[in-house]
Image (cartoon, rainbow, N blue to C red; front, side, top):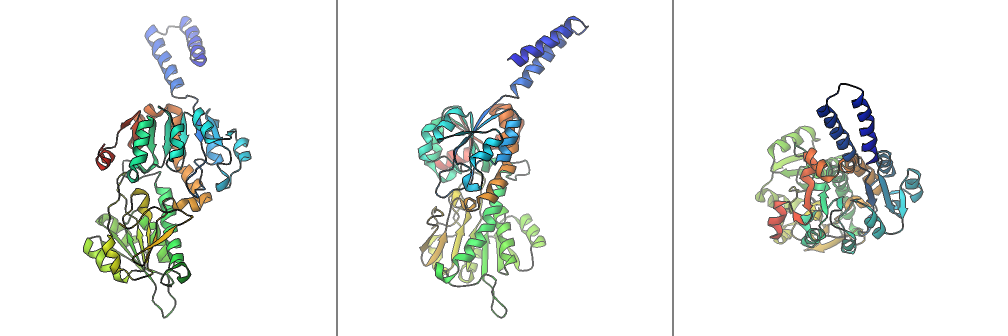
Length: 402
């Protein structure tokens, strides 16, 4: 307010000693007011992630430094960055304030920047009108959806921030990590000591490589195919988007094949497949079950399923969310890996990749406030899922009958 009065005072002196009209004076006064309103000092909170063995943090010290240099205050929960290799001292060195508990961070912050969705123990800390900017994956949890509606918070989901070309800029970096990891963990669990059939993904001279089936040719599927192909596996990508299949066919190495996805095609591949990667994504909606329980009988014992879509409900019917602590289980002699926060296992890579994608949107929200930011940025507006107790996503309303 002092800034506006100071600007008005300067302009008033100019006005009294020049031929500027009164209407021009008030127009410029409004302009200065607007600048002040869109350069607010916002209090931003970064709590520690508490999901099982989740080591990522919502913002790197470099990101915090950028926010503080823009005039904002940042509160970081004690030891929030340790899992990603960032000490409290590093955050303090760029001007962040370290608070001992998550409750204090939530109490002070106007906007919370996280990685994963709030858990039940965090629900009481969330207050009406508070901005929550994180991965929510609402379609996988009615409980979370109802809790956030009840909180009357402003919920903006990373995974549904969508550009005009339909790309998902905040989901992409973690999809890249998860897609690459899917092959690493799948290859590991194919080994006999881990319960797999005992097959080397790339084979050796004179011995055929393993067969990898990837359901979905998006970011996850593409990255998984690159990794599997690099290890020498025989890879097939199934997708229903012909344009995408043409692109993959032109850019992938010779040991990657593409095929239009149908129920018949999936069934045809199951008996000969050693590793299946579930990489299906429906924007903001629950993933469809492309492999049913009865289909597992067609898969040879010791084969491995890695369902990267598990945080959106999974595209394999028998999948259920697991943790890094207990990542696998058997169904019908088929090994299932369904960790819902796969990138959390490589936090130094994941946190850096996430921050570089989210920081421009965090800056926009902090500088302009959520209403103006969403009005001015269509991608951010697409991520706006809840506002003061109102659900704004038609797919979620249909999914949960809300």
